[in-house]
Amino acid sequence: MRSYVGLAKELGRTTETVAQASNDWLRAGYKGAEAAELTKASMMLSSLGMIEATDATTYLISTLKGWKLSANEVIGV
Image (cartoon, rainbow, N blue to C red; front, side, top):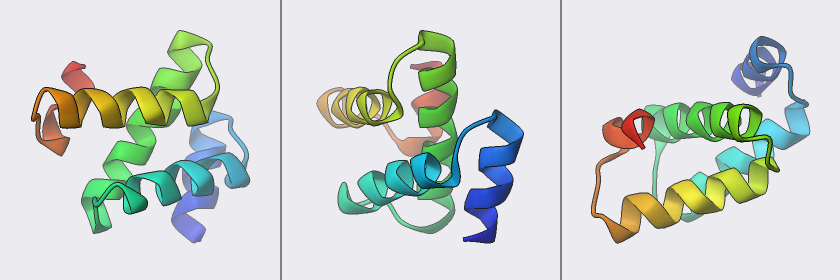
């Protein structure tokens, strides 16, 4: 939970938004540090793309799964 609070402060988001994105990544099968990095990517896409965080997470999950990319390739997306 502390990491969610820290990430939320760092990116200017709410802790609830960060926790929800993380939960979505966990449900998609990503774990631990990988899920944390993907959560950060969701928050960045949300801010840069001016879209809802849940939509950003959904788009990234679809892209990674559809193109069979690894989690460390998410920033390139």
